[in-house]
Image (cartoon, rainbow, N blue to C red; front, side, top):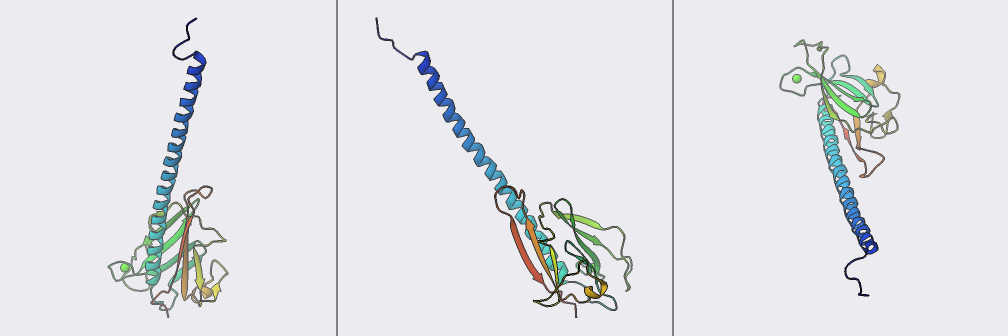
Length: 199
Ligand SMILES: [Ca+2]
């Protein structure tokens, strides 16, 4: 009997199985790489948004209008703040409103004055811009902390009208994450802003 040349059926099947394992492995590696790359780029964008939100907040808070008789900080809670500040080219202040919207949005609302002399009145309609949809702040990790001095905070939130007058600094802390259950890690940044026009 002549020795068989070529592959037996068994050898062929084993060979095919090995090849499909290798191809499967390469594909798994590739899709894992693609998935991590996608997450990393979403996270980079979320960080960018968070950082931009922090810049907006720092700039607006710094410009809080000087109080005449009434305080110009109107509302202060752990995830929401409302104040008057002149942040555009007209001489009147705007009403600025930063607020958290479930599940994960941080928005900035602006209302223009309807009067050119004090006492100012503001348009009911706010122009709202969503700054980020990846905000992960919570009660235990608030966006806003209100300070009387570097060591003393005002903790009865939302603040009473008496407490609103005591604010000297506002700490802003932004935590963003695309998916807290998966890597990459969350990004957090904070800044303590001193409104330059407050007494
Ligand atoms: Ca203005």
